Length: 129
Image (cartoon, rainbow, N blue to C red; front, side, top):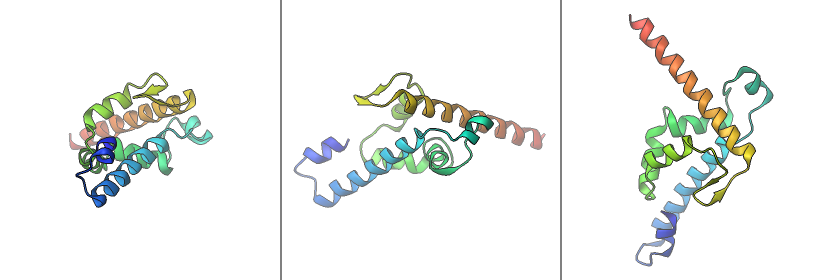
């Protein structure tokens, strides 16, 4: 991943900078996903917007092709990353430490997003019948 491009002397400066930029985009999306839900979101039990919802769309929704492309460009396996993200039930992910609040917020947001996507898919199937 980034460590490889940082330490590989045969990679040109522009490639290193692009890899760092893409890694920063993925990192920011992950941190946005871990934002504590607002009181309204907690009450409604759904993501109501903002950076966290954009991150969910980036990782799992309509913008997922961008995530997959960015991941592959920096040498990150997108499927493995998403599997680990969904299974995160502890506070250390690949040697990076996150607070219990961050992990809990992320898991809530992912479950709310999955529930909404399932409901939307059922509504579309029913409308076609």
